[in-house]
Length: 506
Image 1 (cartoon, one colour):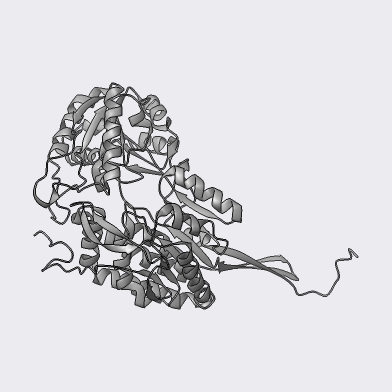
Image 2 (cartoon, helix red, strand yellow):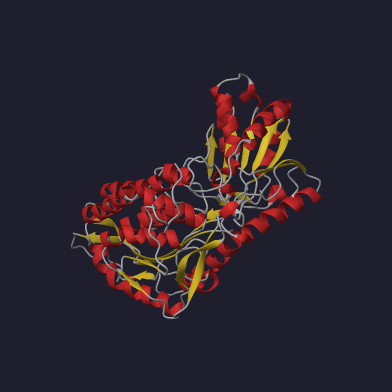
């Protein structure tokens, strides 16, 4: 059953002609009085208007956050956990509505948002609701008369900048630990995907104390900078491309505040010859593992965009993979049968096409795809690009630079040592995949690959309890896992002497 587009008769999702910022628990018009048109990537037609805010709106949001931070930070962990669980319940109750909004705003297939994005977003709030209840301070006995107490305190007000590829899930990744730790926050959604987060606020806004969570929309270069450079935030968290991440880090350094950066990737996906030792379910799973480069239309920082296949199984294994790739159904993101939707914007499509041209000029062989599909009807002008595979070598730009689209660069290797050399021959270190039936070799490879997360005989799993983040230029810090509570807290040490004897130093 295909879902009706938001705003149309029969759709479970309403669309207002114009939306405002969410500040202090209320919908507030931008101080600029200006709005921009938000386009649906599947049709290139307008969804609605959203605020084109200015720096003054960031200040208003920070005013609201600072007014709320002390009371929220002093709330018991039981109270905060109850709020986070209520948020998770609200997301679950509106799962279908939020999934449709996310698909229409971003272009990703509704089968993904229903099965992954929205359930995972709810689960992250539940995970951190549980984690904060288990958080403990500590006591150290220095000597029999001196005790050191260590308390976890919230940072205060944090700034969080959300990417366009997983608007709701990445918001949950950042919001859940920040709110659990007792912080108030100001969120800046990505410019191409502002609407679904506003729909989220319609669902969860009443469950949060006013001012604890604020959303300001606007151009990234202006609003993102106004937030990241502001002296009234105690931390900035950013997910996006590496060039902007460097700027965010510079802004944070100027104010001497912590930063979490989850940046680009060029993840290797390694297939050893024993995956083809038997024609069984595991081989079928490995084939799917390669094809997952097209998950979320390749707009994933950890996308397995480099496939390394042991040379003696290359022909057989790649033939199976290409058959699966050719069977990918592309089109309407609101059709549950669709496997890949449109890219998020016209700029993304143009970037992808330019990289395919670069690869061909470098001598890469086009195995499948390489064009914009000819879709008719209302999707004729959508931002679609075919799942594409280029065969070449690891020195080519298409192997080294992040394309952020459904483009796979595939090469071969002779042995374990060469596979490891190719895998680590990149500036990035966000994710990697290792596939094989030899568990000892899988373990060795997983430890030796320079990446923050290495999937072994699986890929694209993002549980709340597993730490996520990169090495090298792929980022600083971790997201998900209970360690995030430390990233959104500061430690107060209270050193208490119960004795009366002076130190004798003066």
